[in-house]
Length: 102
Image (cartoon, rainbow, N blue to C red; front, side, top):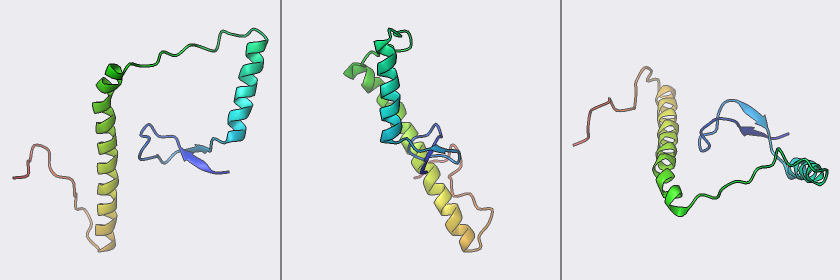
């Protein structure tokens, strides 16, 4: 069985893993949901509002920041691993806060 990340960061993945979601599992869930709907169980299915373009534009900066933070984390980890392979330990490749490149 394949594994997929369960981290809050979708791009980076995570250490914790969960079973992979498959078409078979999706089909089984849809079947159970539809049979419940046919039986009159309509309480657990809700109508979801589709966000407008303006609402999506408001969310875009946060999504972009999350993506950039994940990318930065991934790059810093790769740099640290490369430095350790070269025998350099204790070096922090991230710039200090408040310091700007000139």
